[in-house]
Each structure stands twice: as structure tokens, then as C-alpha cells.
Length: 489
Image (cartoon, rainbow, N blue to C red; front, top):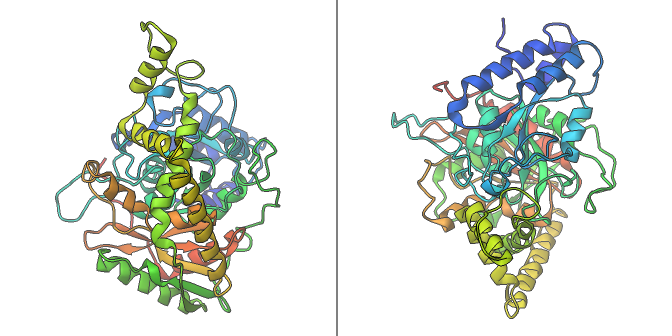
């Protein structure tokens, strides 16, 4: 019998509807795979009974939604009723929300079950999943040089990416603040899309940087991402930034025919120091889109060079404000045995937050402080507006933009932790679309010389996820990326 964990979500859905296998068989296969892959440290909590309950509802006909009986992994940033939600931080250890985040509620409404909560960088701050209080996630991929160095799956959605790549979840939720869906998708050879800011409700998602955070799906294929996004998205009156717009049938409108479409190639993304194989793959991507009927056009995004410093002012500023709520009074852990309330605040935050979170809180507090607010935060917001204007002008000349997803393949765990600036550079291609609130997707394109996946990155105009998905489908069909990590765990 076919290994059910090798099938895509679309294949599982169609197989269950066609009577080829039962949803319970799927849930049991995934529960067993999750238990056998604990060495990857992808899950922080396993919920096998939840997956089985959703499967039984599907098998009995009580659940008939688009995802009936499909078991999913949920990033630990999403509130899940009665199940640990810690954002990868010890300050929220054992916190069990009495409510469900809107995205998870939408997935449940569609019939999905939950395999467990997925490991992540603490409060989504990191590009390697090494800042988690639960320890790093190990990528299922290994270099072909025989070194067996443990590799990062990227971050912050590292557990999510590793779970899909290792076949221990057919699809997962991720969140993307500056590339946290797209960079790990590229590192692990899977697909991931960040939709337009406001497409998916942020209600019940632990906040990092509120003007940037956006939920999105990660899965094996472009079609699976379209299916999951359709179930996750929608207007939510509980989120003031939620877009009151209909949810298109993205799966139904999938087409890899790009005739008449123009693909923008930003000249500023040819960055010094990027390995040749990244640029070679980018050129291949251009040829694949031409083969699908599109016409490449050179465009300019002149303020791109300011995107990374702008992001690392705005995001920490918002984080320092959002994380002020974790003071030992309302949520999670509290350090006892101190004399005053101020001492309790200080001791709790010192013990509860990791080094990267403290670093960003300090940066954010500094740029928001009296005397520096206008010099840093206000100026960064002005530059953000210029970056957004760049994209608006570019989309007068093209329908979708193609770039590499990340400036390298996956790196070894510990290789960049001592150099925060080198770590921050991982998001150099992803951050501009985040600042502009645009839909953007990573799709696997090939392998580097060490046998590790590389991704291609597509950016679309606001609200036009369909063009992004269609261009990604055109690349997926032509790249023929069927590589999977060899099982060693």
C-alpha cells in the first residue's frame, strides 16, 4: 500500500473522498511518523487524539469541509484551546489558552485535525530556529559531503518547515513577519506563501510586530498551499487589520499558463557576495516563466537597500511594545521570592526571555525612546512608505516579481549564532515584500552543490495571490523538484 505520508493534501483529500483509504488510516500513519521523528525536535506538543477525532468525524460523514480528516501541524504561535501555546518561550511555559485563534478555528471548521504544536524561534525572532526555549529543530536534510552536520531548517517557522519536509505533517501553519514562512520553505524544499497583510486574521496569534505579522500555509505543493490558504483566510471582526474581502477559489483558478503576463526582474537584487548558484537558479526561473508564456522585464526597486535596516528598526520597536505584557502578572511564569513589584517584573523578564528576544527589546526600546523616536522610528516609517511606492511603480510595468528566496542554502546549526548581522541578512530578499504588505511565495527550484534545496521567490500586487500561485505553479511544473530528504532519523 502507498505510504500515506508521501501524499499531498490534494491526494489525501481525493483518496478519502474516493474511498481509497479512510481518514483514520491517514491520521494513524501521521501519528506514527510524528512519534518516530522526535529526534528532529519539530513538535513541542503532540496531540494524536485530536487528529484521530477529526478523522473519525470525516469517516462518519459528520465533517464534510474542504479539509475533512486532514491532519495538520500548528505553529506554536497560534492559540489552541486547552493545548500549550508558548511561542517557543519559557516565559509562556505551560500556558494553555481558553480560546482558539481564528486561523485554527477556520481550519477546524474545514474539518482539519491537529497533530501537535510546532517548534519555532522564540516569539518568531530568528532565522534558524535556534532561539527556541525547546532547543533547535534539526532539518531532515543533510549535506552530501558526508559531514552529517546538523542543519537548520530556517526560521522562525522551522518546526513547520521540517515537519512537511520530513513527512510528519502534510501541511502546516506558519507566520511571516520578515520572511519566516518563505526562508524556511526554501531551506527545506517545500512551498510556503505569505498572503497580503490582512488576508488571514491575526486574532489569537502571539504578536511579534503587529504591522508585519501575517499567517500563511506551508506544504509540499503549490496546490496544497492554495487549498490551505482558502481555509485559513477570511474577514474577522475581532482583528481591526483584517480585510473585509471575499476569499477567492485559489485552487479552482490555478493555471500555469502565464501568456500575457510580465515578470519583473529587479536589478537591485543582484547583490554582491551571493553565491553564483543562487543567481544561476534565478536565471533558470526566468527561463521557466518565459516558457510558461510570460515576458521578463527589468524593473527597479531603488529603496531595496534600505529595507533590512528599516525592518530592524520597525520590527523590534513593535516587539518591545507587544512584549511588555509579559511581566509575570497576567501570563505564564513568575519569579517568586523578590521584595518589590519592580523586582518581580525585572526578575521574571530576565529569566523568561532568551538572548535574542532581549536584544530586540533593547533595540526597540532605544529607537522608541525620547530623543531618538524621530531619528529612527519616524524615519524608518518614511522609508517604508518609499519601499511601498517602489513596488506600486514596479507593478505598473509587471504582474509579478521574481527573485531568489534566500541568499544561501541551509547552514549548520551554530554557524551564525555568534553573528546577529549575518543571521539578519538571511531575510534580505524577503523583507521588502513584508514591509509593503504584499503576497509573496517561495517554491523549490533546485539543489546547490551540497545537495541542499534552493528556493525561488515570487511577489505579487496587493490582493493578487492568484498570480503569485499561478507563477509558482509554472515554476513547480518546470523545475520538476521531487527531491526529498533521505530518512536518517
